[in-house]
Image 1 (cartoon, protein in one colour):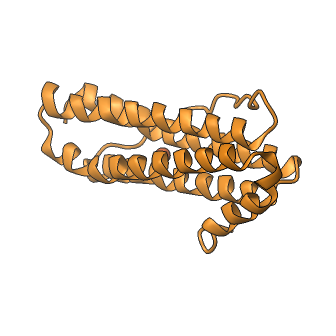
Image 2: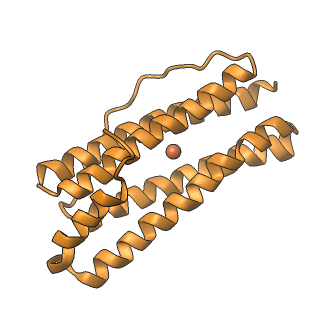
Image 3: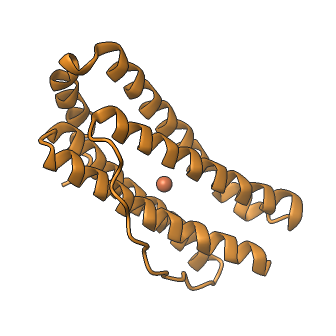
Length: 166
Ligand SMILES: [Fe+2]
């Protein structure tokens, strides 16, 4: 496999590991502010990110490459203490991830022509589409209801991830 492509897959493996820590941090912020449903949503998202990192690690191993475990950088807390601020941060993170995986796809397609990588990236890209839509809808709902409606929505977001973690 092309070395630049291997390096890019290793980078994405590590970005997914960082994404998990990002969501654990958001879960802590929500938990600390006593939004238990939102905390549960973010914690479940963190475990999903671990699953994504495992997809990339598994694909590297399938291509006979050992995954590289980088140090996880410190995760800053989100400026702003509200459900909207946290979900906006989550949407920005998902968009960043979609752009990174899209760039990887472009490399595998145009630069080095690696059909196995292109096939592998379908599931991560589909997952990005799903995550961006889910968070976009939540932000619309939070803004429409205003803070008075957030107690009910917080409960709903916890229930959305029932049977998904812990
Ligand atoms: Fe991810």
